Every structure is written in structure tokens, then in C-alpha cells.
Length: 118
Image 1 (tube, rainbow, N blue to C red):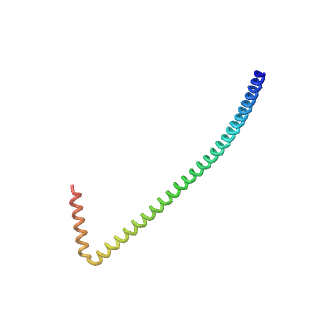
Image 2: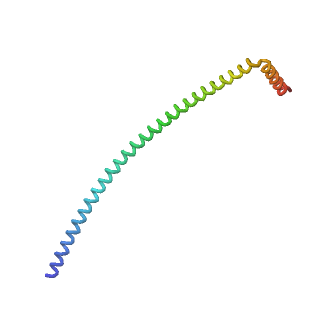
Image 3: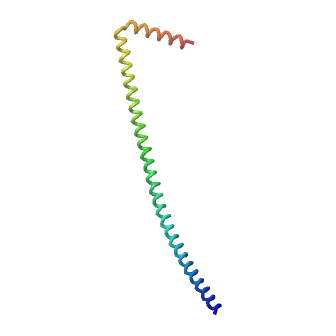
């Protein structure tokens, strides 16, 4: 009888182990399914984020081009205004003392002539 009860206990242990293995197999299958779903979801999120980052990058490049254009326009306007103001100051100085301006122009012309002489 002892051997029969030992065999019975062994059979019960084998059944219990088989049930635990079946439960573990189901748990692993569920985990694999969940992992596949998570991987697919993260793939979708990654692709969406990549598209958004690309779009933002394109917007930044566009905005930088606009800012560059505006800066060049502002610099051009400033340079034109500065040149106009300088020309106005020179004209005012010539109007105040035309003889001095004429002598200065002759001196500059003479100096340039000496420098370019061969």
C-alpha cells in the first residue's frame, strides 16, 4: 500500500506540475501578445513623433529663412538711411563752408593722383 500511495502522490505531483506548466505557458503567451501590442503601439507613437519632429524642423527652417530675409531688409534699410544721413551731413558742411570743401576735395584728388602715379 505504501507504494500505491507513493505512486498516487507522484501522479498528483505530476498533474500539479503539468497544471503549473500549462498556466505558465498561458501566462507567457499572454505576455508575448501584450508585448507585441506594446511594440506595435510604440512603433506608431515613434512614427508619429518622427513626423511631428520633421514638421517642426521644416517650420523652423522656414521661420529662419523669414527671419534672415527680414534681417537683411532691416540691415539694407539701415545702411540706406545711414548713407543718406551721411550725404546730408556732407552737403550741409559744404553749404556752410564751400571754400574749405573745395580745398579739401582738391587735396584728396591730388593725393589720389600721387598714389596712382606710375
